Length: 346
Image (cartoon, rainbow, N blue to C red; front, top):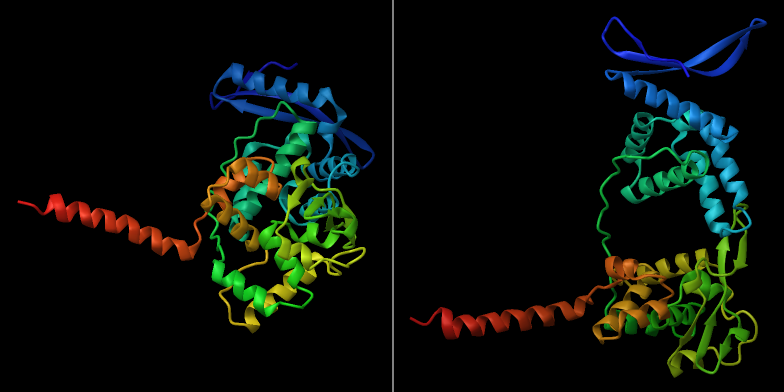
């Protein structure tokens, strides 16, 4: 390992051999330079670089190649939809980093790339990009600690349908191909992919066994796979009126894919001039009603297929809009009585 040399500026610089380049039939040794005001820091950074470079040939890969390798090594264990998203990210995200070797990735370059992506994408999307970057570095350069400043999380603007809106939705879809998907989502709560993969063999009495989901793979083909998480494989007891609508159906319960459900739901909302909300918001409705009824969070999580309560607390624990006015009235009425009897008494 080279020793640090003092520069005319007063800083210390340590050189470490990086690689050899060939040009015009001649070989040229390329060195990596580490400069610091402190001699020990310069030598430490140089030693760390050399150690990372020599630990595994993987760190000399370009980041894009390392990402490709990371995806390939996990193609048999990750969800097809996850692999599809990773490959999309490989083509579109953090492109300024793709041609930089893993051993040369520096925090300032990463921060610059994240800043650029923050201009065009939501905080959630940028955090997902950075999460994948962190996973790849964890696999191929584990000694490198990321300290990236990420955009602040934005509180999601969640809409929770009211009881009356759900009743209206049931009325206008009665007897249509969207009736069963809406019932399964609002009273399950089942996800689009789970609904599309549901088979009559998965239903025993009033109990539905959710053990498969339909997702799109990297070739844009709809495939049926096991749920993404352990919690996703679950049993749900449905009310009689939901099970009755599926009686007599053999094989696939719904002959739609998740994209079909989304498109048809949007058309229904527009056609009947209802407040805009998504099909996925039917799950919000189910979780919110359950919480308002005093159902323990553990049971809500099990029924909805959530592995922990983080999502439940941040997204699904909302009071329905039609209950908000009642609660506000009760609170204000209490305070009015308090002030009329004591605060205003001389």
